[in-house]
Length: 307
Length: 307
Image (cartoon, rainbow over all chains, first blue to last red; front, side, top):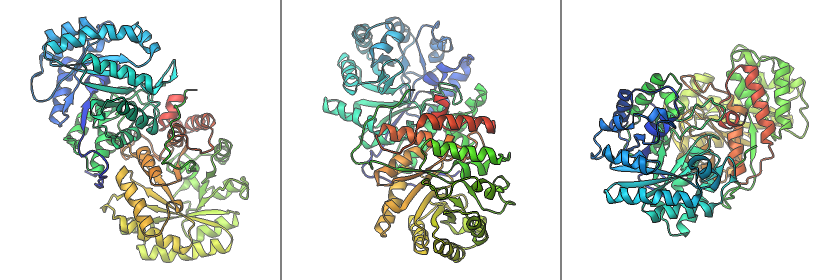
């Protein structure tokens, strides 16, 4: 199998953590319901390929995301206290109840950086979302459960346009203050570019939040995801969300919303000599299998080139 | 139309030149023959959208690239001594004769960085390719015609694997010594990554060739093209080859070989506040039109998102 030549850049981190979101963020955009067996196999293959964290599902109300209505069934088939964290998304206290009941040890909450998206997605204000998340985070932590916080619309918002860097930092720091252990800084609509990424990370650092507390979550809607990941590495980011095969958005849909493809990220990290622990060949095989299950072309360039 | 927020990086160049290769490098991979009228309209629309250089066609033997057999007819319809350079590719002296006869004022030659590709593509050795190009460059310059030299397989070669940086520098410098005014450093199979790009540019500079003499020509086969362009900006590259709509490779072919899409590059440059002179809306409109003519989905993420 062809591989990139390794040319290290001593200014970059020597290792990163890839936070795999395919089974949750990827599949939640698929309309045809994927059977529980297939989801469990997908998660198992991702773990076997070396992904160090795999977000598995969401305890969102089944009415909103029918694809993930089987969340409890899926995680019942996984070893939740093993060495690989298998987080689940939890929208609110009711979701937390279900997640705890099902034995989740890692949860993620989903916040907005903008007032308009808070209103559209959560039917709340930014202040109210904090009020809503407070008991979720507190109860999770009391149960010994780790909490990650997604912050969405950090670079642009379809209604508000450009999003102020300071506002993102403020929302993020409030979530950390509630008790989240990590922020996933999301470019939900994929508009951000490399300088914006670096400026936002530096603004967090200036406010006292280290790059080590941040993960970057890029969407490739405007083709910027990997360039932004390169820029983020340069300012010390060491956790990247990615989706196997680029699952999570049809590359040919009008509003392509695909996640950064895990394989494309792995290719870059391999070329830069940055450790990540993922076996690219196994991962490509998994994404090819999944694309056949879904009857869709993979969005990852690496998968298309190597299959 | 949604646009990225502008966040300048003072370490990057303030302006770049986009060298548009769609009509030649893009179309040469299309099997269905595109009519002369359509090609001329495509070139005209690219010029109207503000592309400062448009490579128009190739005087390669029609047997090898039937799509470009109409090279003389196409450039007969263009104003070759206008303010926008409209280069043509010239494979050898016979091609040069045809290009000069047709009135070309700017030509490009196509060299290999590796022995194996020189043999496969040019049926020659690296030394013999220099011997072959010597009269082409000399006669072009004697006629007042500017010569650009493509150097292909600069990051990896399908037969040889990784390509030695020093060998690329050596081949490139020999082409400049012959009289080429600019090198286009090609990642023909798209395997290169960001650190490799920066190392190669620095190696050229260490050998006395300034970044201003280099253009970067990235293919997105493994999804690295734009990240590599960002890395190249950081080491002072100010000329980038790109193809409108990502024309030049089917994104779903086994060996996807698409060029960096001009629109995706423009989006990044806009976000970084780097001048380029291209009107994105007109360019997207042109690529949408061309994708309809070809009956293919555009490979550019920006085009898919904005159409």
